[in-house]
Amino acid sequence: MANKIGFMHPAFAALMKGAAGSFEAVSRGDYESDAAMAAAHPDLRALVVMGGGKMGAAEIDTFPYLGLIACFGVGYDGLDVAHANAKGITCTNCPNTNNEDVADHAVGIFIALLRDIVRGHARVVGPDWSQGERGRLGPSLWQLKAGIVGMGAIGQSIAKRLPAFGIPVSWWGPNAKPDLPYPRATSVLQLAKDNDVLFMAGRADENSRGIISTEVIEAVGPRGYIVNISRGFTVDEDALIAALKAGRLAGAALDVFWEEPTPAARWADVPNVVLTPHVGGGGRGAIEKQAKLVMENLSLFFAGQPLKTPIAA
Amino acid sequence: MANKIGFMHPAFAALMKGAAGSFEAVSRGDYESDAAMAAAHPDLRALVVMGGGKMGAAEIDTFPYLGLIACFGVGYDGLDVAHANAKGITCTNCPNTNNEDVADHAVGIFIALLRDIVRGHARVVGPDWSQGERGRLGPSLWQLKAGIVGMGAIGQSIAKRLPAFGIPVSWWGPNAKPDLPYPRATSVLQLAKDNDVLFMAGRADENSRGIISTEVIEAVGPRGYIVNISRGFTVDEDALIAALKAGRLAGAALDVFWEEPTPAARWADVPNVVLTPHVGGGGRGAIEKQAKLVMENLSLFFAGQPLKTPIAA
Image (tube, rainbow over all chains, first blue to last red; front, side, top):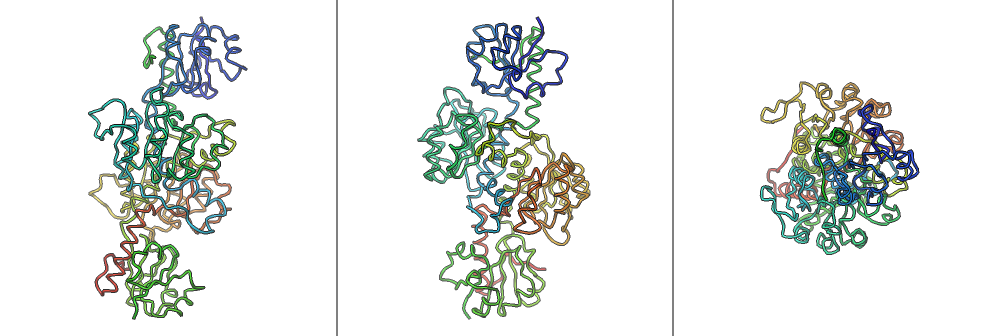
């Protein structure tokens, strides 16, 4: 059986071109559907997928000879790992490869929000600078306190950056981490009450679905800010939009959304937001780390050896 | 003689409303010209001015009874301090009040440039996210090294932030500062050659005019970035624009310009820039610190006591 790999996103093949020769690459973009791809290549043994894209039981069952599903990226909320594992398919992801990049992006969209950088740029390149006021004057960063929801690799990378700006950090997560130097709040709600900006950095799973609830958003309040670089479904997006429109939340910086692409019309009348199209993960350096790790896992898989970063349901 | 103060910018009076009662405020915005203001109030003894705005010999001489010119802000490159001092007029500024805010802004526009945040926002709120590619993929921050030109309060505040992003710092300035933990390059040119991103943070005076020259810009090079939060005249802006258009510089993030407002048309075809309308200085916290310090200097002046932060030519 050939060492055939199915690349489910058009970017992957290019990113792993260093592997040409060792494997036969099949690109999903060349086919109308998963089924057409599987029909043309029934002997596909490994897929490289986006961890956030849907890869449920039906999608997995489309490919009869799979032994490996490798997620390019850290999250794998779109993948039915339990179903895959039950069929003897190993799943892998790329843990700890992009936490620095995601933290950079989180801090970047946070400062862009506070310092009105998106509108500032529009003023300079448009006709507005010469006309009237300089725009809203937000608080200085050093006047704010930050709460981080979720203190995994990404949360800790955010926490490492904020004190350099004079911003003290506290956090909440489901598990106590006594080795961390930051105080842990008793709940997400308490964290929201005690701080000016809430960074959602936690693992995105059923336990964190909607964790940034109406109540939490109201606790962040009219002088507070929310930054989300996790997954859109961790925030009650309808409540967030309503709070922003009513001035019950000062601002939000979001890289992730309920639906992606999010409908542009949904954000047309929403003030005080900085929105980016789910690009927090890279940084060329992070993408290079992930390409390397995916390749290592593929090589180990085809060599019949234990994988480097397997995930279990 | 009344304790009359002339506020030369419309925002100042509001910022110092706490002083109502102690002084009589005269607003420049209520008059056609400096001369009309001086004619209506020949007994003006103090002016509060923007340090970057022109206050040369002619402007100073318009007001016959001046004893104090207080610059709201840190820079005072628009003020002819020598002429004022020769006439017995004391000048003050607000040193070390906004270095944290300016450094926040410098890092913010730098990340916005690297992570394509301005265009990302436009993609989300426009029709573009669903169409085609995710945009350019720049380097990760941790893959870069930074050189800081000028290691005063602002340079040091930038230097404090960058290591939290995994970015090593070196610097150049005219005076050795052996207590600093960062290596000093032998020249601006060497600093540009040795690093990926150059932060212009030095004092803006005749010694630093055009210090970011064509040669320095070319040394930063096609994979390098320039950030300027000092004054526009420290950079050869024509050379910068030419280098960006030709791909000989990867990107630039600028809060300051040769001319302010800078003509929008000048930037219409310039790729890979983030431009903000000279807002680096605040942050409400910085503006509050400056308003307080200006008020203290005014009070001391009218009480005939030595001023807190005098400047000399």
